[in-house]
Amino acid sequence: KYDGIIVSDLINDSNIQKLNEVYAKNNNLVFINFDSKKINRLFSSIHDIERASKTAAEFIALGLKFSARKNVLVFTDDIMSFSQMKAQNAFSKEAEKLGLNIKGIYEVEKFNKMLENNDNNAKKILSDKIDGIYISSGNSMEICKFIDENGLLGKKVIVTYDTYKELND
View (cartoon, helix red, strand yellow):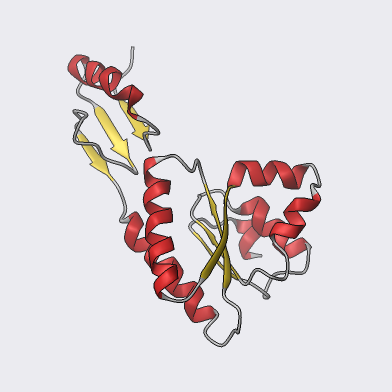
């Protein structure tokens, strides 16, 4: 028994029929961070992820205005999720317009596992050849800790959605 369901970021269409069945039984179905006209719902709440991603590209471009190189990495949640695909697409288009070179797109969880395992590829990925980082995930803490602990803080322009006490210290 439940009073309602909150769904955050539908990953694929395989859940559409089930969610419509849930709504038919209890119309307290709410979407956070995505919307779909194929699914009945009470309401959806989503920030303008495209505008946020374009703004992230603008911030990074401004931070690298006087830099000869403009190499950027993107870290995201599940690459196949609706909101992350929109974020990547908007960021990529704006980055291209602004002369930023996207050198890679990585999933945060996979990258965090590389950091956990002291994988040398993590260090290579965040090398001196990278000038800017956009983290479209709400889970940037491990990446930011790595940047700080490896003396890279202040050497890269970083834009992320989230903040933690540790990041602000």
